Amino acid sequence: MPRGRKPVGQHALSNAERQARHRTRRLTQPVAVTIRTRRPIDRRSRPKRWRDAVSELLALQAEYADWLSTLPDSLCDSLTAQALEAIVELDLLTLAEIDLPRGYGRD
Image 1 (spheres, one colour):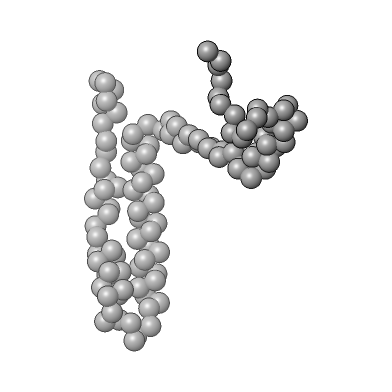
Image 2 (cartoon, helix red, strand yellow):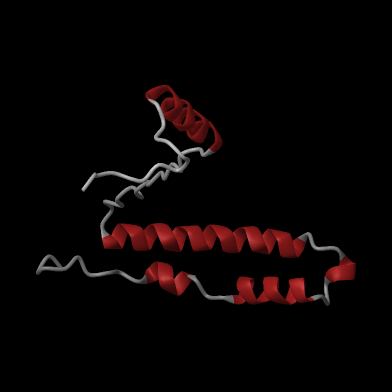
């Protein structure tokens, strides 16, 4: 029994025909390239990440307070103003005052 695929046409392709078919197929069908990237590992300790997150929240709250203070009078009763007031009224200083344990008996 012969091995391999059956010829598509009446006869088997010559090497030149096979190479030409391969070249045209490569030109018409681009190879799908998958790029896999990994996130960099965060090597900060949990208390350090906590302090960084709280400081970022406090900075954002200050920016929103500035935005609220410069909001035009026509927008003082809008949903944006209500959302900004809710953010400014949050008591984030209690989060900043939390002293996290260091863990593993190092408290």
